[in-house]
Image 1 (tube, each protein chain N blue to C red):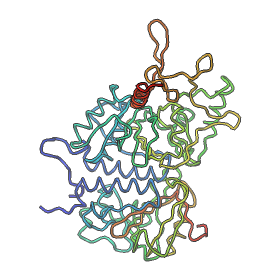
Image 2 (cartoon, rainbow over the protein chains, first blue to last red):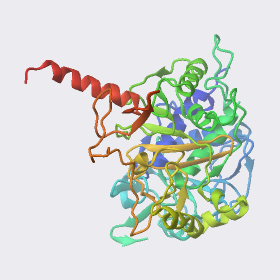
Image 3 (cartoon, chains in turn orange, purple):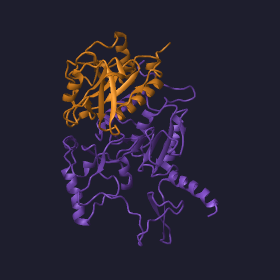
Image 4 (cartoon, rainbow over the protein chains, first blue to last red):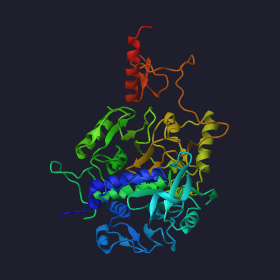
Length: 187
Length: 299
C-alpha cells in the first residue's frame, strides 16, 4: 500500500515541530515543503492535527472530499468549530469561536491559505510574545478584511483566534497575542 | 489511516511509546499553550508505565515532541545522574530508537528537566520541558478550580498578592523558596514548577521555548521565547534570588569547580560542616574543564 507521506507519523512529527516553531515565533516563516514531499502545506497541517475528536469547518470548500474520511474530523459550522480552514483571498464572512474567559483554548485555530508567505505587497510589522523586538512579514493574497476582522476577534485577551497562514510550502503563525501594524497604522 | 503508527520491527512499542492519537491530543494542547502564554491547557494525561508524580506530564510532552534526529538531555535537580533523570532517559532511549541522549547542555535540542533550568543560557534551537507537580499558583488561596479558572481569566491575583503581603508582615520578606508565582506577558500567573528563585529570571525573554507538563493534574502550559516573565513582587519589596554569601559577606564558591556565579547545593557532613557544590552538574564539569588548562600554564 502506497501511503502518502503526510499521513505517516514521522512526517507528522516534523510538521508538528515546525508548527511549534511557528507559534513560538510569530512571523517566522517555516518551510515544510521538503518533509511533506511537496504536499500542500495546509493539508499537511490538517493531517498532523486532526482526528475524530476535533470539529473542522470548511466554509470555502478547501478540503477535497477524499480527504475527509482520512482526517476523521467532524465537519462543523464556523461558529462552533475548533479548527477552520479558509481561503485568505476571500473576505472572512464568518464569526469563529473566541473561547471563554475560563477556557480560552476553545478560541478557534484558523488555517488561512494565501498566495505567498514571505513575499508580497502587504508588509506587516509584528510585536508581542515570541518576537524579539519587531519582525517584518510580507504576504501576498490576503484579503485586507482579514486583518481588521482579526483585530476585532483578538481584542479581548485571553479570548481570540490563532491564525496560521500558509502558501503551498510555507507556514507562518499569528497567534492571538501578536500585535500587528500595517505600514505605520495600528490595527 | 490518519496517523499511521510508527512501530519498528525490533521494537514492540510505537515510536515514542504513546500512540499517535494520544500524541495528537498533546500536540494540539501544546500549540494552544504557546498561543496563550501562561494559560494552563487541560489535556487527557495518559497512563504511563511509571507513577504519576514521577514526571509523566513532562514525559508526555517530550514524547509528543521528539523525532528520530533529536538530541535529548534529561536532568533532575540539575544532575544528569540522579534516579529520576536516569530512569526517564533510559525510557526515552528504549521507546525512541535512533534518538541520541547527552549530558551536555550545548549539544541537546530537547531538555526534560525536574526542578532546574540549566545555568548555561539556552538557545533558540532548544526546547526545555519542565515537570510540574502543582500547576496552579492560585490553589493556595482558592480550592475551587471553577473559581480559579475565572480568576485566571480575569487576571485577578489580588488574593495571591495578599498571601505574599502576609509573608512580609510576618517575616519581613516573601518566603517562597521555589515555585515562585510568575506573571507571563502581563496576564496569567503561573507556577513555574519547583525551580529555585535563581532560575525564575531565566524565563524572562528566554531565547528558548519553555513548556510545562503536569501529568497528575492534566495541564500543559508554556512560556514562549522572548516573552515577559515577571515574578510577583511589590515595588518596595523587590524580588530577589538566593543569597549565597557567607557570614563574612563573601560569595560562596563551588567546592568542586570554584564557580562563584552558579546555584549551589548545600551538603552537610556528619560532623556538621557544610560544603557547597554546583547544582547543575554539566555546568560544573564545564567550569572544571576551563579551570584545568589554566592551571597548567605558568603564571
